[in-house]
Length: 189
Ligand SMILES: [Fe+2]
Image 1 (cartoon, rainbow, N blue to C red):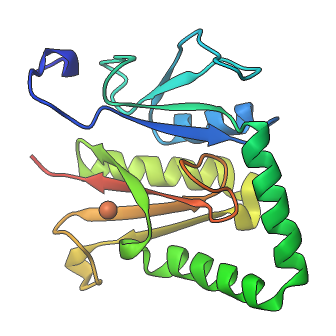
Image 2: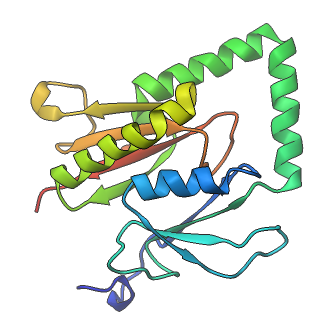
């Protein structure tokens, strides 16, 4: 099977994700560092910028399948995120809970919600990890954390494959306050 659109069974076909208003270029830099290609769908819904389809397999840029979409966070979520930030700055318990969650996401990501990208080889995964670090570490500072688990090194891992967890708050399919983990898996053939 060379084209995902040729597959006739049911499959998980897309993830809807967001970036912060004003951070479209930053979101593009992240997906490009991850090795994905980008199609502009031309559809903007009720938002000010078009939805971009992000393709983990640049050789098969199917806009409907095997893609995640990014578009700007809508006003309703902006209001919610602003309220959470305000409450967290005033409430020590909430602030501590958020820090606890973020600490777990950085160090023990297996039970923290995320989505995953498969790479065709371990080398391809390592190249993506290196590029994310090279191109975004300085720009994002504390907003980016990358953790690599290699089962051959005796590390606690959920699978017999090399996994890298990229924790960031540039692209989320949920809450910018919580941040988003993206798992990268290198699966040998
Ligand atoms: Fe996972």
